[in-house]
Length: 284
Image 1 (cartoon, rainbow, N blue to C red):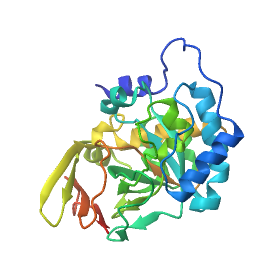
Image 2: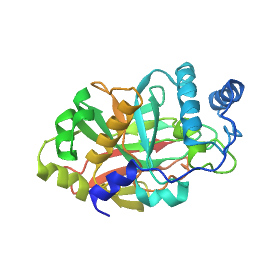
Image 3: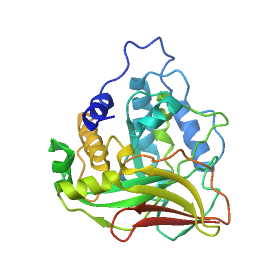
Image 4: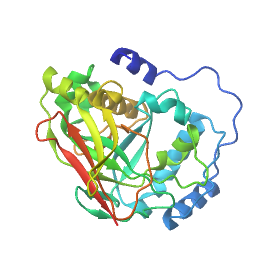
């Protein structure tokens, strides 16, 4: 699918919505936070929510989460890979907040029990250079406002016995728990650089066995990772949030999330870029 078509789909929601349940109460959000803090399975915040009510729930939860997972450090784009839309019953990207406590460096040891139902997925982050990112008109222009990119292994927490989709995921801050940031990829604001991050191959491996676990392409994220960063910055602005220098923007998953296994070493490598930058995590 062409980039223009993907970006158009990213800002268009499906037609009229059916009747929805009442938004989560403050008591329900507090109970979910208790489950999140304890790392135990939760009943979630409802399955029949409107996107509007889900977003309100996300924002309320985000005001409480710093007491558990530290200060806000950025924002997470979700569902920027259209291949995931059917799986998660969505027709456009969504977003959540990122926090500091469980943000790791490449090569760190991380428990395989980080949360109630921990997962990992191959991802990518952009580090914001300035708030002008939201003013860019094209992904090429967006590069001028990004300090650098890096491979990222997100560590979400599904939390529930049965899987949640769509607004139910948005309500729980798109199940963010933490992640591992890899090697720095310095930005060159050129068409050649833009093309290279779209054409790169994203390879996930288990390093001890040498087994390849998954493979994707840079253009899986709304046609280009820079397009995903631009979408996120512009969407945040419509919610009254301007990105600032140093903000971490998680751009979306290249492949479906899977549970970690203790004793494995997982790497996500960007093949096709100079020096093949990667992020690595050692699950304990």
